[in-house]
Length: 283
Ligand code: PAF
Image (cartoon, rainbow, N blue to C red; front, side, top):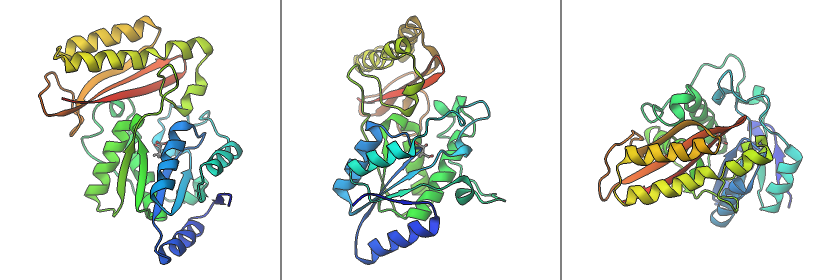
């Protein structure tokens, strides 16, 4: 059966209530559309683990800064429908802005501290926008399991904290990054890259692999980060950040300890595309 396209909150609620009445488990993948293999891997996982797979496609204005790419963010609902059907999605929630944010809208969700570094530093208000829309989507869809990609690791960690703090009865699963053959992480924003920028962009993953190895070899994080920045800059990337942070509180670290978990994360501009990537390091 092809996925049902539903534009209203009441329509989603009705469909989900029916599934739950029959004892079914609901899996949920929130997206901003322009689906790629990364999204599809989350949907496949949801298909395996739950009875009814809901995805949302909504380019959330609240999480874009005034100078960011809200208007040119890629959109193609027909292509997204086809891809969602191929992986067996049951329902696509495709609301418009008025359905999600009827005016006046005055309530926001903010997770403190975890947004101070990495993307939070260069995108003020971004995670407040993400948490607000995800909290709304969770209330609308009421899934048993929600799936997020490791590529947006800060987002995933913040959502995990939000779910814990606000007692959402939802299990959050963070799934591995899906990469192109040359290591570039799949992203809707890769369409902004020219051919030569696309070739240069694989330096992000190379720098991360280099960095992960050196951190594991106990090389000082400051030296590792300096070298990674040089590698990326040499390929034409304009660095936003290269940071090694503690997995638990997302604070930058200068020294690592055995038995702990860290995230080595990068963000850099290649032309108009701001790309992010990361590796989790367990020592
Ligand atoms: O990761 C994304 O695509 C978005 O941040 C999300 C989770 C769909 C919220 O708008």
